Length: 162
Image 1 (spheres, rainbow, N blue to C red):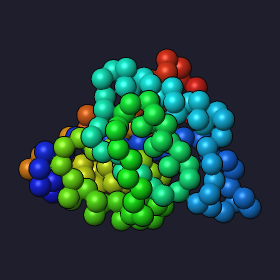
Image 2: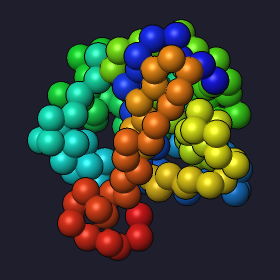
Image 3: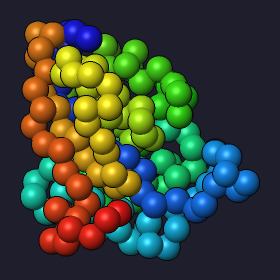
């Protein structure tokens, strides 16, 4: 997937959400209290290390919107843009083609890690993104490089499962 301009791309999976009612996904599932706390701690750790984006584009699903709002409130981005292509099973890759600058995408699994795999030329499933986890990519001239794959536990100084 070529990048027309230089792009710093941050992929952020939503935080820990409520259980699926009846085992089915639902767009109105909110973050849990633990999910909000852990997401805020992850975002604070990123911002304290100087990471920021100019735009933050998010899935319209509640758990992703809440994650993106936490990120904006913490100073990761001044601007939040919901986009239907970032909902589960959406066409996130089509968004990337038109991006330039520093942009964050907030969404779901396996969509975000599959997007990263596609950009990097890896087999789908080669990367996995935990809840509130981050993948950072750099794209220029149609070439992409993995800059970071960060588990929340790594950023927060623990290796407990998320």
